[in-house]
Image 1: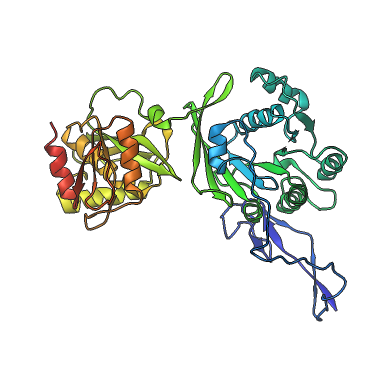
Image 2: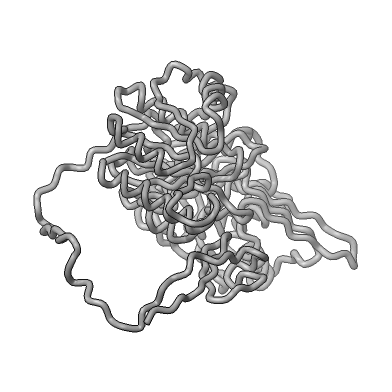
Length: 455
């Protein structure tokens, strides 16, 4: 005998609950639980071994055609993808509103179309006239892109089935798509999941590179069900601050390339321009040594990027509560590093305000940045500039030990290529650059001595 079972799905995080609640127990958002279509639960067992189509099995060593990627005409985009678009792949791209997602994909679609392949751009947020206005502003009005403004997945797939199979299909955005076979308004969890499934199935069966644009929530994660990120092959995040001109395209998941690979762009009047050497972008303006400034060779995927870490220490009058402000780094890690500097090195930050900034709006998550942050803090506290052409990297433990980090040789080679003459980091790094004077440090007090001895 069958019985129905209710379930409620959070429209913010996609979590499932079996009863309605005012607040989602997973993401703590209010009034986001919506009842999904009822499910039928059978108490008897069913035989599903007959009636289906046979599944074809293949051997792991069976001959297969080599993977051929298609270039988008944007080197930085291709780098983040792992070398270009893979036929039959599904890509999910998220980013803040106005960050440049539509501009980037319109430029990539135009390049693909101009190369002789077919590119289809479907907008569910803008009218065709609006997209053509943007294309004219970007100088792409003559690109042979097949443009449409539609939101019905049934209509889109029917139209695609009656025309030449495109090489690239862009859906902007998946939250605006709807299917008349699924209950719920566009943007709900069931609609997003169902529409994405139909579009991905079309892409896999026809060898089409599919790009889905996704909205983001206020905390920066892609809106909709979490299963959406599992369904696609590549998840990309388009990051950047509106007050800065640069944008970073970061691969968060990639079945065809390295994870955390980045592509760097600069927003200009004629659209997004590629930045082949992002280190020079983040280090521009460093002409004289200043106290509280240290250069860190970060590693994004397989790409080293040199960024500037800036620190400011302000002494307060007795009784005032000191403030800690961080931009571009983890606030908790700064608190830990300050505690280690006070406990292991005898420095006093408790009566001072501490401000830390990663220049250019860049965001760091590499643990190797500990030593560069510590060097900037000590330099600002002592009001002594660090050597202008030096780099700092290494992970700092709670005991004050400076631990080795991955790919130290690659970081040093990038620094030497950009004209840096010296570097400080862990004592054991293996490969070193012959063009750079390197000094290994074992304990954090060695860093303090090094900074104090800087002329």
